[in-house]
Image (cartoon, rainbow, N blue to C red):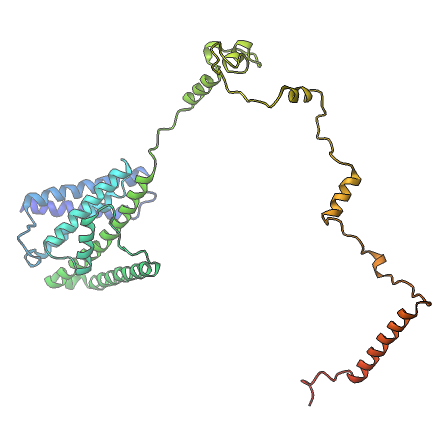
Length: 357
């Protein structure tokens, strides 16, 4: 009996610490992490004590569990939730520990046949591939969206049910059936969150697996030492001279023979087409010389169509008619007659028939 009361005390202390975490600021603070570790230690002691007391057995059914012992089914769930918030060890180790805690929680519920049919299928899928587990197996965006919406509605309904059942605490203390219903609703909500957590853990493990192994960053002293070693400026031969001595330039490949006596290359080099090219480039201008005259350039632009001719003010000036050109005069006269005939045959406004009364 004393052990059972001790279990109740530890469990209540762990829940109290868990509730305090919700009101703490950033998760990276010392206070936050200390509270998390304290809560984990309390629930870990609860788990060990419940195993020594043999509170739950595979030979029992849900009805065999007393209402006061139902909350202890969530010990492993609380452990998994709190372990995820710890950051004192490697992230991959944290995810594995949380995954194991959630699995123990679901295994215990499954042994009592307390998982609903959809959750039982999710648990079977999780056992088939823990690291590949996903709440939505289809790649269809519409189906994934519908699944997320349905699970969100399910979570909302469970929270509303808990709020409704907790509205009359006095009645709950006197009615064992009502207390049992509240505890079962809490277990259903915890199960819902457990599968969501397992889905997120699987996704995060995939990301961690794809990440390259991060090597430790070198210290500034090491970086400076490496730079000096690469450039041949170690502190053993330090000098205040701005220009390096010839021996140092030779060591760094700035001068010296290209090939060894055996014909092996000692440093990278580039093969040129001829020595005359180098010779011609010694006494030359330091800018690019033109390759054609201005007239040649304009002629080339005109050939490519880059010069537009005509236009300007002269394009609007009409040439004076030639009075001796009778053919031109007859053409102008016929054009004027045709225009007069068209105007007579089509008076102004004859084509507008829409606005007539």
